[in-house]
Image (cartoon, rainbow, N blue to C red; front, top):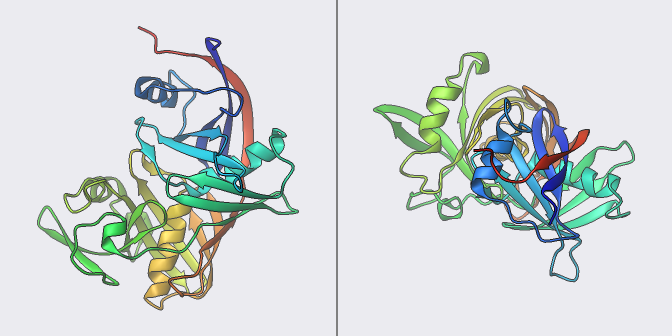
Length: 283
């Protein structure tokens, strides 16, 4: 294996990714390499690293692995899924516009639209606490969470990865960094959790900021947008089709309220540049 690793830099609404094609050879990355490359001063700089691999399943086109900037591997990423689809299509790894992808949380289906956007079947939401996991005995629409003596009301859902959603009256004043960090590592979430702060403008529009597990606040989080929509839809506060506005831009999220039905996410994916980087971490 060469000492130089080829990669592409991509972004979806400012949520940025280092994407590596591992379909031609097996590539194993160390936690230290991922952390170093994620550094925006000394490395490539990204929220997450995406690995494109071949799937062992005959009816699946690719396997898709996701690593946070801290080197931890996670199950799902909505913005990453869109960038993944654009990458494999633009790089000529497939000519399909309907792409079946294996993730750590199951199979997802990605559709490349005529406009070049990507529509993703994110699967059905799972509100069971054990799916996140979340140490609560029973499923509920809302839970009270004690954070250093302060009580917060949250919704909780798995979109292939765990999410806690807080409704706020003023998103600009929301304590995303301070409270997000504390909830992310709260003892009731043994595998940590992504934390969304959602302000409902009207029944078709949600404003959202997300403190992502292992990455802090990002400009956009696709699964976070899905989680916020389904929590609020489950409460009857929004309609079946909602525009979710994140700091990096807008996503369209669709869900009909049936817990067995999939959530659909549509949004852009942008190729930024290609490059090569040396393997290893400088001494």
